[in-house]
Amino acid sequence: MSLNAACIPLNAAATNHQAAAIIAGDTVLSYQMLKSQIITCAAVLQEKGIGYGDHVAIMLPNVPQFTINYFAVLYLGARVVPLNVLFVADELAYHLKDSNAKALVVWDAFLDRATPAAKTAGCGIIFACSPPDSEITLGKDVVDQGTSMLQMENDTALSAMQPYATNADDTAVILYTSGTTGRPKGAELTHFNIYDNARYVSERLMRSKYEQLILFSPGDVALAALPLFHSFGQTVIQNGFLMSGAAIALLPRFTPGDAATLIKQHKITFFAGVPSMYIALLNDRSITAESLSSLKYAVSGGAPLPVEVLARFKQQLGIDILEGYGLSETSPVACFNNFIQGCKPGTVGPAIDLCEVRIVDDAGQELPNGEPGEIVIKGTNVMKGYYQKPAETREVLSNGWFHTGDIGICDEAGYISIVDRKKEMIIRGGFNVYPREVEEALYAHPDIVEVAVIGVPDALHGEEVMAIYVLKDQVVLSHAELETFSRQKLAAYKVPRKSEAVASLPKGATGKILKRVLKEKYAPL
Image (cartoon, rainbow, N blue to C red):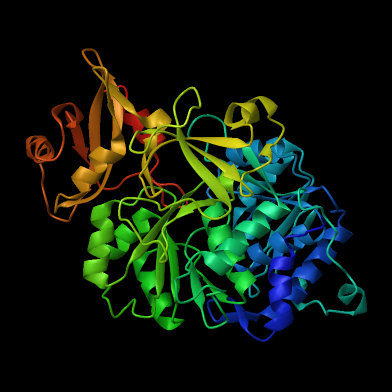
């Protein structure tokens, strides 16, 4: 079956050509303009030698050029490799080399890292993007796509270009895992993976018993506060909303104040974020329910959302947050709370229509409801495998089932609760301690803003439970007070015996707390 995921915005342009597609500051791109620029960009890439099967890395913040280049690469039948904009030169070189990238599209401000990394990796072509009002000095093999690409005329030759007739199971995007359990691996997602997950977001993500068909429309606007290089922002915001003919408003760097300003200015109706974003919005005293009054829907993913945060958000700002679950390897959406079956706080909802979800033991046998085990997923959203890593692929894919490495529980209604990462489980004196359970208990403390729980080596118990937390301004909380509070909510073996208050917790580009960084710092204690 022929399918090219570049059709996602192009199909929407056919019926919504004058509707807003992308809002970036004072710039608004209509669907017709977006289509024209995607085709123009594809022509520029093609002229420089990019074609079917080539790998093109993209290292861009949340700017229109990300979306334009993303779909232009797909248009040519090439493969997109989105990269974290925070990568240093060594990390960038690893990803370029591991993905066999032929070209790199990069924001001009990142050239100091990109140029040496590309040379190390043997990536011979660099396309530098810049804001339309800036001028950059270009070196060898660098093409400025800033003003020149956006101003090119859509001549007859361009209008005659057609998307490459890729097969549905051809690789479209290579998304790199975060590398929390080793070196990052590139998950190969097909054109059908990308298209089908976007279609689910477009048509069924926010469905209710009153609205069975496409819910998002040109009247809706999503805030792209999540980085588009990450699967969450890429599928749920960019691809899902562009398939709907709705608009996305770009926020290159999240702050609660900037997010609230854009929500009010552009009458944002949909917000997707990770838990730390919701925590930041809650703790910004300038943000009120009126600030977010245009929001109809808010969804959370990327990490477990503390029930206390969900409840406070509803009470304080009047907005229900629907929590879901997914991974880069599942395109990413796999589970989601919805309005038809009802929402259950503390769960990520049931499996979506595109897949099955089971809880299994170490032997791969399905466990009864209520028993914790590994979450495995099978469906049209599951990746082909890890790029050029057959052994690692075999470790996680068995008979079509993807083994997530996450521990979960399924209730009698099919709702999944995420307990924790399998490799983050703490074994204290022979007892299993799931960090998320401890974190949930500590989030109930009125003075704790954020918390992460890790296991640290202990001579007596093997591992000990440690809490690293951020407090409200001007508040002091001793370890003894923390332990006393914990004992009211947790069994003795789960109570943190070590703790430390910090000014902030380390986070990745998506806002997810980096526990590996905490382990590196505190594990020797």
